[in-house]
Length: 329
Ligand code: GLV
Ligand code: GLV
Image: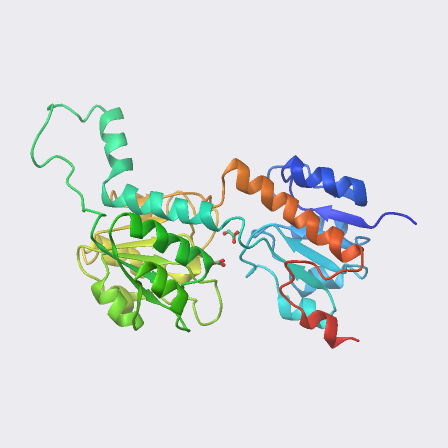
């Protein structure tokens, strides 16, 4: 029997490629930049499986071009780039990489939180630019304390909860907003469930950990930003479109909030002339929250494991659309 053909839309760590090459006929897109839609459609025309990244838009047009496609293993926890409903309708399984990246993503959210509150990046620029002309001054580069502040976690899934555990270590008061109460989480961290508006009014740090869906798109708009304290910070390492970027810029510029730390943007890559980048109280990164050597290697193993399980006739461990099995039976 010939091996099933898999298209991998970018080079993922060897840990995964090695496993894949034992079981599949693997083609990896060799360039740093993604294939265009036309190239992608051509590449997957005879593939039974695909490994996608969050920057690959996988829609009906792609599915239509891949009649043999049975499974897509997404190399990310979020999968808003994939039309999952359409995949299910076509009996195509979709898997993701949850859990392995939880702590790395939470580490980075916390790193950005600390960086913006204590002006770490701004201070680095200050020294390098030769602005450090006076050895020490009582009012040089004042920031805001992290310890004992209130953090408001929007979306208490795995990553939100991992951020809360870090906040505990800084003696922070923890508020959370979630569609359901998480009693175990509350018991372990002392987190308190509150309404969204209450969280926004009371938190010193508002940290976003929701997936992008129709109900979270523009969740943080001008009206919500207006509820935040003038001394509060917004941290976003979920998905860019959860925040209305223009409204965020206005709020920052007017001094209605103290700062923002962003790992994600409305469009990625964000253009170098994004007005947010002109503000000193904004810390930015190019969507790298899960980017540790160990986590990216583990994610690569996971996408491979999902494909191997599926082609061995088992349910893939990280299947996100079990309905794909039922619909067409
Ligand atoms: C990263 O943003 C992911 O969804 O894994
Ligand atoms: C995010 O998707 C999570 O696992 O919290």
